[in-house]
Image (cartoon, rainbow, N blue to C red; front, side):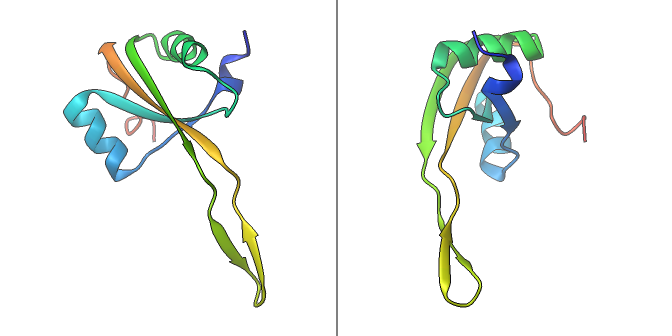
Length: 96
């Protein structure tokens, strides 16, 4: 198994993520693109001491961005995980 911090990169602190956390008890993370659902579940349970009932993943495509006047660059692709919690709660705003 990979290290926990190699699997989970950071939480997605967006309006949609906050709404999902309040309404449906779901938490959103940016995760490693090669991580599977089983590894993500084990990493979240071990890192935050919560019980996970379901993991859903989505591959997010990078966007084109303008770099300078003429050239166009691209941000990298990344993977997002929606974690449904069965027991426990994760509150990122208290940590800030």
